Length: 149
Image (cartoon, rainbow, N blue to C red; front, side, top):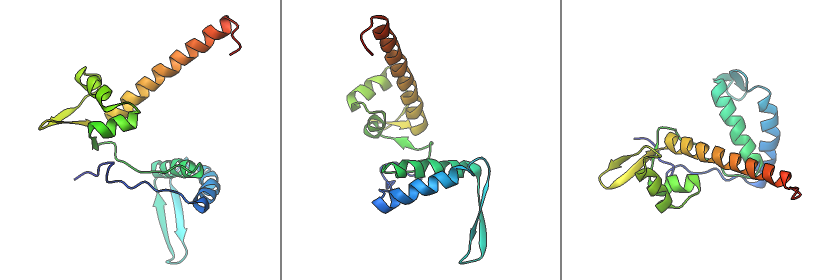
């Protein structure tokens, strides 16, 4: 059974974690282009970490370095409408209107809607892109009108 984000526990960094994450993310970022071999001296073993996982680790450390909590979720996980709304940063009723308007694919389990995490991310990226384009347009208009922006 796939883990849902509700069962994932965010790693909440302590101040010591933040400082260590800041240093280690900078160091590890230099090696994020390929697989990474890590030697574990205590047991005299080496572990090979795939480059994709190294990049995820660098991203997680970078977030922790800023004091943010981090959770790992598989993209094939299904979300409830409330979880999806929280992720996108909208109300649950608004998200349901978007689902009913077929702007985000979903399936029904009984009377409950379930949305794939990857579909929620794609929707969020699309609306974020539209928001940024609108902000750029507004900033350009403000400059044309010499409003000091």
